[in-house]
Image 1: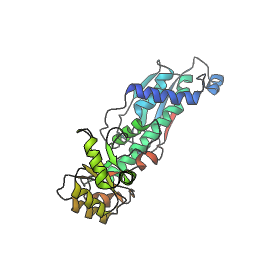
Image 2: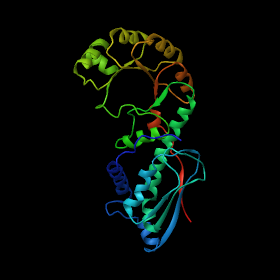
Image 3: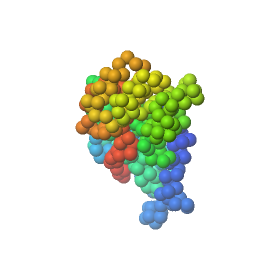
Image 4: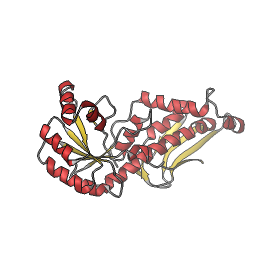
Length: 287
């Protein structure tokens, strides 16, 4: 079981889930099929079950769809965020009005499936590099409006969060280097104007560029972009005792990540964690 960071705030979760419910139920917030076929006073017991093996994330956010629709629904949790779950396992039980449960069902399952898919993929990467000193990190390649939840799901799978946005860390990429006049100019400008609490990271895609960064100084982290395992090993040797954290990115897959980690890099950032994770299959069944 991974230990996730604190869940996004209740206010943010409610904002996201309310928006999803409004999208699904329309301006009048109604499920016309359930309204026409299910008696208004019918109570049921429903169970949410996993249909595959994996890692759980999004439990609180997903289940909030039910309480937003109907605060009188009773929900019993059978697992925790970050738990390893198995096909057939009951995740939660919901008791109460049938129409209310059916109104919130799809939004809940969508959130659970998306976030658990991210957590499950992250856990597979974390397992693949077990025994090395590297850590798995996410990126900013997230869905608009869902970054906080997606990054939370990464931590449920045992991964770490990279910067949350353009506002909380300096990351000098190839376009910044080109527009500023070169690596030295970019580092000088960033060092002069940054707050002392903000880290500077710079991207390089050749060993010559890395040597320039090492010689010049001023960076805290160097991103080694699209380098193979042999190049990464050379890069780590070049960094040596220099006060630089190394991060590998680009060309990372479940097939290549172990070799990348064995190069000695400190961090491996993977955009696929949030932009390409398969949906995790859950179902809601009425007893």
